[in-house]
Image (spheres, rainbow, N blue to C red):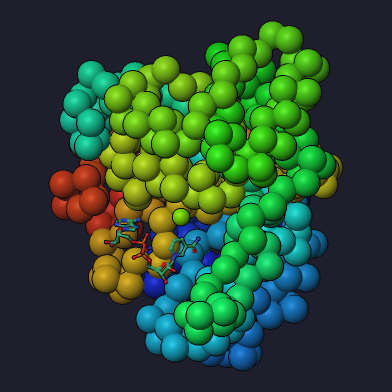
Amino acid sequence: MKIAVLAGDGIGPEVTREAVGVIERLAIPGLEMTDALVGGVAYKATGHPLPPETLEIARASDGILFGAVGDPDCDSLERHLRPEQAILGLRKALTLFANLRPAKVFAGLEGHSALRPEVAGAIDLVIVRELNGDVYFGEKGFRTAANGDREGYDVMSYSDSEVRRIAHVAFRTAMGRARRLCSVDKANVLETSQLWRDVVIEVAQEYPEVALEHMYVDNAAMQLVRAPGKFDVVLTGNLFGDILSDQASMCVGSIGLLASASLGERETAHGTFGLYEPIHGSAPDIAGKGLANPMATILSAAMLLRHSLGLAAEADRIEAAVAKTLADGILGGDLGGSAGTTEIGDAVLARL
Ligand code: NAI
Ligand code: MG
């Protein structure tokens, strides 16, 4: 069993170190972890944010543990050399098209949500976001209009096979949960959304036990705040999913608590190949200060063990240790506490 560890920039290495410590403590026989450079740190060392060696190590692994990329020193570089291109490049090169973001309030943290505690306490949902298509990967550029205006454009498109494969992931996820699926689109104005809706309805025939509903994205944004407890699995495209998943994370409490999995179709010996990362970025404002909350990355490591290595019991143990640490009131600055990165990591290890 091989894990590629891509820590990246800013707080990436700080939070990844704690997650690696947790995996090591489980002493899983036959498990190897290999570090590789990614992001701004890779650009500075090799001239490329996603060097070929890193892609090779990632490809040869069963799962990738990813920290974060993004470095203010690189802000003036051309877009293809920016650190952020590394994560887009990995998702595309490894066909990681299904992004799973669970959002659930930990016991005792209901009061930390941006929502009223009784509303927040009911949240237990997973957002399934498509990652390889949509407006992020369509034709883009600048052009001059007939009247001389400068125009920027980004083409939004989806093919039926792209929608079909993500819809299957969402229906299968719903089958393992409360069997309710809400597909979010903007079919009242977008043709991509009309196609999306047609394909989701077609795929739904294969999952008669799942209750399917459709919702426009603007309404979904409102319902996520008004009554988030009504959602079980939310299926949506790349752009809408980007926005809704950040919104859902703040309903839960802190960006420092939310993990994610990005899965493809390749099967490993024990599960599905994937990349696992906290949903936050490199947080340059707190980098190097030992203040970052490592929980999101530790929970991402748990998802890696569950989905890519078939180690569900070990994943459960990590999640239970995280829940116990939080319930014991060991909280980082992002949750109004004073515990630092290593202190939180050590507290999880102690409970493990
Ligand atoms: P960010 O998520 O890095 O930070 C937003 C705010 O949340 C900051 O105030 C930060 O201090 C705080 N924060 C984030 N993670 C935290 C943690 N674990 N514990 C405590 N506080 C935490 O987003 P921002 O500032 O918009 O972006 C910074 C850089 O990260 C940019 O270069 C951006 O492009 C990159 N980025 C990379 C991502 C990735 O690697 N997948 C995702 C999002 C942003
Ligand atoms: Mg985002």
